[in-house]
Length: 342
Image (cartoon, rainbow, N blue to C red):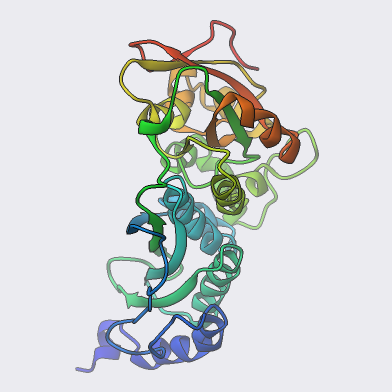
């Protein structure tokens, strides 16, 4: 018996690597010190990181959004989603992304699909100046079906240890602003798949499925790729306009904002209008307000905490930023205004 008979096609994997080589190479900077295909990737960090160079590392995936993508064979946004989940976690420390590695597991290696995913990663990494220096393509026959994929990413950045953002900088009176997200990004999709199982089955049959009020297919709103907040967060951090930032992923706004609040300080979050996809999801799935808040970003993908004298500069740069409240003395962490958003 040969490996191919067990479901692993080494030639397909080699073809995939060959197809992505040029894509990966275009992300390289002069600091990448090893060619594609080595056992380990080398990166020169001399002169980076200020007086106290400190490395920052993150890892994440895109969860079961991959199955939503599979329903309509719409994989093209997943690479951007993966980069956003990792890089946006990293920059809330104030760190500059340096390099990224990916892990792709597939039921069957399809070189064109691998190239599609990696091309999207490379494009997103180009927005933050990071290099895609390595990765792994794994074929898992019998574990994943053809068309099924799983993605994980790993990002490393650097920051001056004396200039990191975080809870130790937050003070009473700081302003709390939200950067908008028009979609679900990469969180809550196990619940989405339960609520919209019939929609995904219809899409898999080639049907359009239900529409939103603006005429777009609901499926398009589900699969839409993530906003990448890293460029803005880094711009503000480098300008000295931030005390902290919170990336709104699993756990929702409250569950992530509390991670950058010191003991004794809290925020009463003001209401904001949810994008239609969240209102529709809550109605169609009879999902409680508490569950929606704990699962989805609800239209705010990144929270910025800024000193009062910097808030106007942030609003001028991002006019549609949402005023979420003010940091105040409190032992309750993050609470919600009694006004329910609509």
